[in-house]
Length: 118
Length: 225
Image (cartoon, rainbow over all chains, first blue to last red; front, side, top):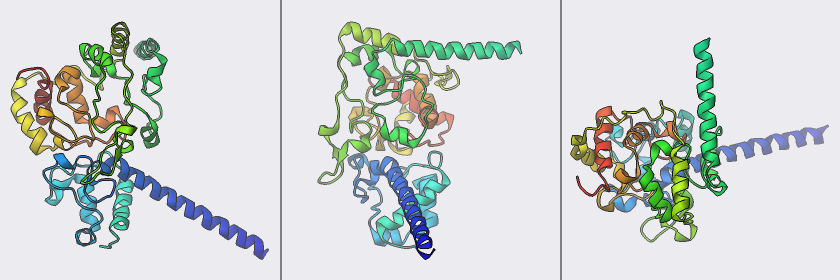
């Protein structure tokens, strides 16, 4: 009985772990499709479009500047674009393309990338 | 009831029409391009497809351009397609990886003409590219150029005048010869209506902006302003 309980618990943990990593993988894919074009494969603002940009995109690995930016501001920047947070128009509005949950997921993902809290 | 029957008949005819137009194309086209509106609108589809959708090609492209391009297919997307699978880390920034960019099939003149004819039959529904989306006033082009480069930031992803601009979106240096004005206006207003999840943002532009941007783009590549 104890063994069965343990097996069931292990199964549940495995299920939860795999579903969490799948969710994270999708957010990473979303970052890879929409954000990488400017913020880059290394997430540090060196995307393929960089040479044409008059303002360097935010370095998402910069713990200092990202740490100084609240989750609310990141959410607003992604949803409504750079102008909404007094930044560059070159950061577009993604609120029509991404769902609220996806944007929440991106903010959470950015915290992992910068290794910084709010 | 009669109206409903007519509507169903009309839709069926439109569907069969586009399906038979798609059948005119070489099967190799459909290996990379959707020639009929896909039922799968998931992000996964966008991640796995090999080329842009062409089910509305007849409302998008100019036929002369298609005939010419199919015989000499120069890349339209400078960073490859989809860009996120064809770039690599570079010294200062990510760069296109030529080893991952596949050249488009080249057709002879007769085949290019036949393919262009079939592609032009793949019309978008009237409400997707409404006739008159671009009202045709060329005077907004100067303001459109400013919007493209400065106020709306299109240049971040698209090459415009003189080939200046970003690489992740299609180049627009010859937009006027390649694209139909109504398509430019309708697509710019809401790209996701054409292509769910596409990585071009919907910028909530006012119609005045759309008209100016379209006026600017239609004169690119036309050899004069």
